[in-house]
Image (cartoon, rainbow, N blue to C red; front, side):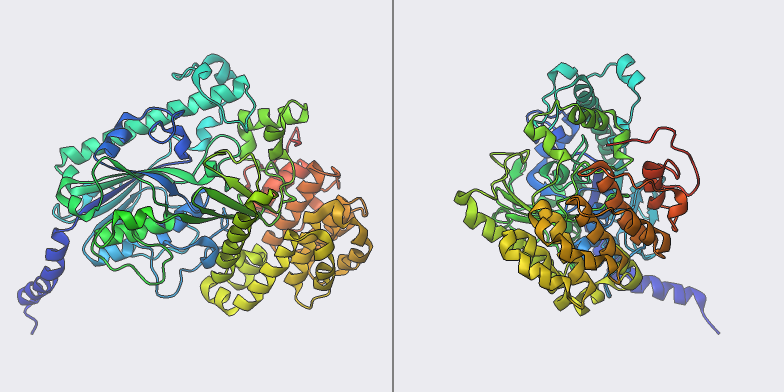
Length: 631
């Protein structure tokens, strides 16, 4: 016979040590605003908007002058935050995901470890993860989630609050609104970036965004007031930060500083200031990035940081300010964003930023339907087409070099590429080597096309990468032939085109697209690749030959699109079709829906743009595009 009261008492007694430990732990509140780099707040940039509530948090804590998202777009950045892992290592680097990646074996999203030590974990409410979430991550993740809902008011909490008022969609206003609705911020008072043309549209857009940052600041103030009302302010670490950079054209989605450098403030509660080795109200100069945020929360909570993560704490027990300020390096990445593909990796060390454009033949301006809803995006493109931009402003619409080097302290908008300057040859070599070490060491899964990863890797991306580490290293070396003078690279590319490995051939063809006209002399030998066993290689060969004026690409593209059994492969092919349609030779292949076997998702965006059918938002259907946009 079971004595239930005794059983209940024993269960409660068994839990007492956990509850006792949990009762004396700090609360942590994350406040995220969407799509804003540090450039929009006066606290971090003299040309930014005032934000008295955020500034007040900094006065009672720390302002981080070098905080970075590892990715410049929501789902990839947020997945990096929640996993504390580099996205290209764990298969979560594509926005939007074609297939969710399974978490690395033995690793959970970090709030689950907080629950293990007694925390109540809540998220209000955006997740947008590219990895599969287990059920033990959140006590509540919804629009009603709040620390106020925890069953025991003495239980410590970790709460995430996302404010969407600064999202790029706030700048998707019609022309009539710009004419009839004045901004609080005077458009004449804002300072435009040198990459943008000085037009009324850009001035109004920037002024409007400064207004949005005022709304965010008000929201931050309201949430902090709730903590005060609950008597929890001096028991809670408050992190305020942007979920990545943005938001004017050419920032969100791009690995420039404007897409990665975020505002970060941490308010330090009086009760727990002994966990912070820094003077209240000071500024931190060391580099911190999203891989570090989860480990930092775990360290503040006294929980063990899992060995499988890539980040390390920057606050809490055992962390000194001197050590944090010595951190001077960050790694970042950009792959597919919606329907737009390219592959970019960057290393910033100190004041120098190295950018590796693995597919630099794609201009930054390559069509992305959602971006071009914005009047400022349209204005920038129209100014380019009318020949009204200076060289710095026009660069966004032109092919990129395979590698770039910037002094981001002297040149914060990354306008002067130092990669060809002999005075910086040693710096270039060092950072190039550092990035090669990063991508080989991870290893970086994006050296396979996304279609391959969806088919073979997503059930265990980390294991797949480790099993193929040697092959990935070879693919990196093949891709980096694009960094050599063409005369030196040419025989190695020709050899790679005959490789038995299809993805060595893929990167050799990519190198040729990068070299463009410099490689025209070997174009006749590339025609054999039009019969490659891989559709992506046939299409990439046709792309190169079209770029140098040696081949009509339409037959190769239409054959591949008509026979592809992969929606992701189809999307990669259509990305190359948009390149040829809008840039370089400007070839209209006169594609129709009937030419494309796959449908749905991002394919619909490309169909809408190229054929007038499909849907600009990626919904499956046959919506007509009455006026095809052209770049």
